[in-house]
Length: 215
Image (tube, helix red, strand yellow):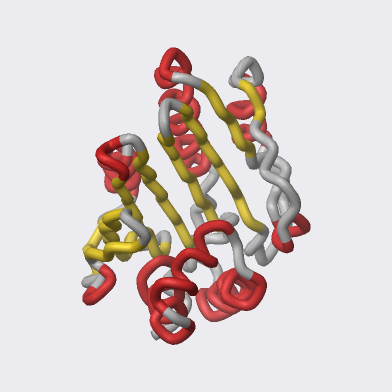
């Protein structure tokens, strides 16, 4: 699905790859990670993180869109296959300069209400996660529906892009609050990188490569 997502993005915005340097390939706790980052001209920063391990029994694909040039929420989509179980997280975080509803994205979520919700637990960022977000779980038979949801979620997000640009400095500052919050308070993926790479390298990975909020 990752390549299809990048194709959807490139249909609207020109993607220019940004070197990921030492983070392009990582091995952490038996998992092999590959990381790519892009500048989406007129939109912002895009990154893809993929991981495989445990003899193919576990793999994960993450797409992040940090819209530093448009007033959209920060977009994160995680697809996880682990030992026969499927998990899809579609999350929007409030980095908006001007709050507004996203009814078309909410409609996509509603159209897939037949898929089982997954309990995400409680996290520090719950207060800034928008209500259009979702967490779905399933088995192999649910894969086609999960893939449809993933594609339509991204398509609806891109369709909500405002025509006019926003203040990039103000937008980066809003996004940095979320990224700094991850580094300070942690999260399921953040904690893995902090433990394996240490504070300094994890900060560089997150700010420079994954979210594009700093050098």
